[in-house]
Length: 104
Image 1 (cartoon, rainbow, N blue to C red):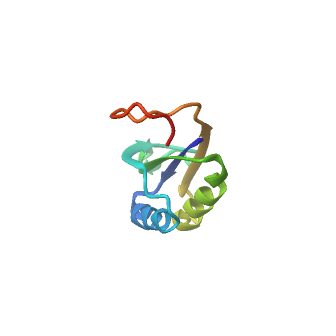
Image 2: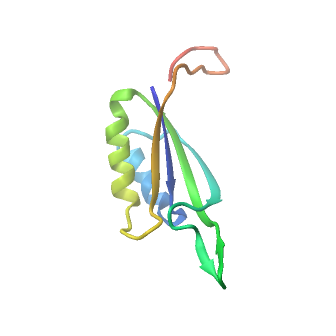
Image 3: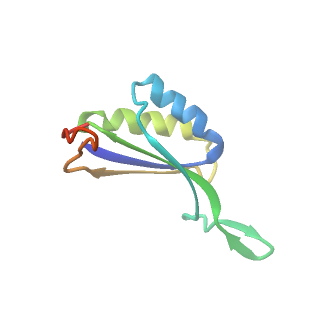
């Protein structure tokens, strides 16, 4: 299993979520964040300010990672600086709280 974190522009979230759902990846967590990447945020009056972003977090089977990453990249890409970043990390174990069952 792998965890995928996609840090994307808030204005593309709906199309990314729809594209992931169409690909069979509908289970995810979404949260709004502020931060800055390589572009160092937004310059306002000589000061850098953090930009709003949205993080989508998914846990998928290892063999699905490339399909999920491709879907996110294609549906979130605007071609402008600040389109975001995708991170992939291993998940050793997962359990359902209600039942205690292991796995996804």
